[in-house]
Image 1 (cartoon, helix red, strand yellow):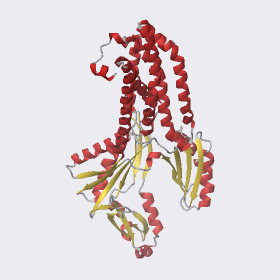
Image 2: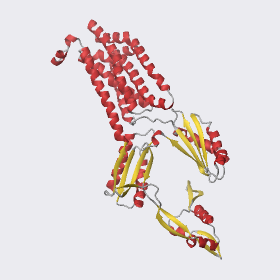
Image 3: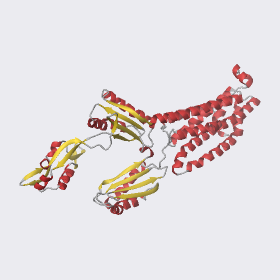
Image 4: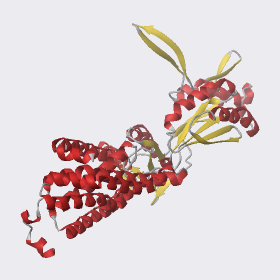
Length: 506
């Protein structure tokens, strides 16, 4: 075969190429994300539109149907449905398994902009797009935060300091704080004062709503630079809120403090986290589908450790759940099983061939095939998970078949002629076609699994792809690497000095 002839006649070039491939395979191995299982949900996106006061029938007619008709033109959608309720609409799009919902965001926004003038004027702000991911439902890391600070100060510190630091970690989707509390300005209207001054509660509500705004004030050119201006109207303290003008009467202004009692109080809690009679704040970290579970967990704990050191131990945390630990243990179990299988395979080859050099040649074909399979997983955007590792573990027993067949034929020619290079050329040339045909039949069994659709297709894809890559790499190794190593390493049995223990074992 051309490949085996080239590997034998140009060993220096093959050495360089193999070194480059191995280096890139190791880099790819370090670059692969680690997770328990691959994302098992189809990519989806939801468009939520709020239409205050509208009935479900009006929402369906004026919003859901318009958005649904426009989104039906989006490529890659497998299903499209909508839900209309009083005051809001939800349009959900499920995409095909090979489509990234995040890559579709610009197109979705563009289609929404096209129909913006068709939606009712009473719609509250623009429609909001939510990306639904398989990993966005359960946290990969949960910690209990405790401190001597009061609940409001602790929650504010976590929101301002901790959450942004964790959110900057690659692959983090969302940070959730549960059990915290916040302060709010509470306005208690005096009904008697409102009636006496002829002011309705709705007027007070409108005044509070439209005065607590920051409004764009236009642009201006200054020294060849374009500057943007904003009119700040949001309330900065209670005094501004008390002096809000809500009406006039008898030639004087009526302020909010004249008809209401304004105070800063703790907002009612909807969720409380308690243990041993003490309140805590729960921190949950969720990741995107492409995020690395182990790296995110390590980064989160590094942030919390730095916060603990920064505050002198005033803010402490206890890990409640860490999916990275489970992932590492599971991956380690599979890797140990693969390592055990590799050692047993080498031992069996040694017992059968009675030749250390031949055993080394075949043994090298296993890690090389696995590394090249890892390179293929990286190139196709896969991750290291239980399924992909299981696929490579299953393939270990089949990987050595091609190398054994080629090496045995090479060894037979070598014993007859004594010429290593000529034996390598004949050994691979005679069986190269048979090896490729045999590998093709094995690969063809797993290739159809790559075309399965739905959840089953998503689950089986990594497993079958790992086996296909490993088997394909083993065929390449058997016709390139085995002849190359055989031409370098083989020796006649009578020229080899075998250890005594090996002779006794034989």
